[in-house]
Image (cartoon, protein in one colour):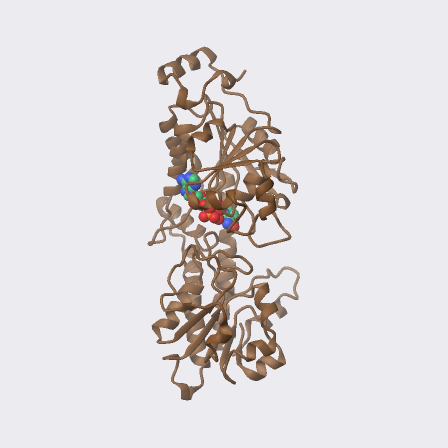
Length: 462
Ligand SMILES: NC(=O)c1ccc[n+]([C@@H]2O[C@H](COP(=O)([O-])OP(=O)(O)OC[C@H]3O[C@@H](n4cnc5c(N)ncnc54)[C@H](O)[C@@H]3O)[C@@H](O)[C@H]2O)c1
């Protein structure tokens, strides 16, 4: 039988000696809380953590712990900068948003959703995960179930995070608490596939823990749960999904570059090849953000530690990183010969976030694209009415504008992605009004192709 009900939170604990004696007396692993009513705390209230917190708050009041005090204050006022959760839902949710880690002592389950970025050398930065593990170790109660959701290379939960939790809590996995991993698969800005609609993988440190996680997540996930064979398998599954996507888009980007030299349009090729049932539909594009463009580096680093050079992954990353530069070279090529390249030309870049209809600008490849234009002497103007600029990475010379019409006419236009609002705002006439006749227009997603547009612009799409 579990003993957690009789044990005070860590802050009030009498000390490690007392805990050891309790262990000797009980010599039994702690039980699990009731999955239907377990109190859940989420660490990290971003794209992943916030919807999850609200989902779990429907079963019993949840705790949302965050180190960013401004975010906590915004959430308390009903504003979610990620756009994933409505103000109405936020205000009515039974969630205590807090920057006070001591509140974690009240949680039966602690779920970690902190970022897993790379550093300036594209090496994994485990800093946020280690910091969160330290916080958990300092504050969790005995009997807690700790679950990691952040995307990581296999082994991170058990080999990096667990030792930190044990060291800071003085508790032992299995004897005092449980551990699990459940990768998040949400697709931000996708109105049709929300958290509850995506099948979720769960894995616990023991089969009983996996069963508990299946029941717990059943509270919020309607699409079903998949019990992975182990925590490492669950970690590997998620990072494989994202790496597969990165490699496939890299293939399309590389082929776009070759086909373009051959005078062939990639979209025509993809339509033709896609007439076969087993062709995989990927399109060329700018691969940015903090998932697809980052996660493969964790595997490249893991390969290095295991004596493997992950050449396919590294090459795919390289191709995707080169794509903004290819587009700038393409634009130069499309400029009328008499106008001497991009120097002093006004170039409008439509799009700054890394993904369609998503405000997230982290690691957006619009930034290196704008940097490369600026390096060629262009006057760069950038318009993206939905971008949320808490991460402005590069784009040094670009002027961010609210009204693209006011700064025109432009000598060239690049549309990096097709936000719904772009399609609404720019019909053919509105687009034509932005630029001189025969100005190059690079339409990376091919959303603006029409006779009126291609007659006016020197139009190019992959
Ligand atoms: N956004 C996605 O589409 C997505 C999808 C699947 C998986 N993931 C993965 O989920 C994880 C989180 O991603 P995200 O997009 O939600 O990140 P995010 O940056 O939107 O949110 C993370 C939050 O964690 C907070 N934080 C950082 N360190 C903290 C700490 N020590 N204690 C408390 N809070 C802390 C940050 O302030 C931030 O608000 C990453 O590993 C990511 O790869 C993201």
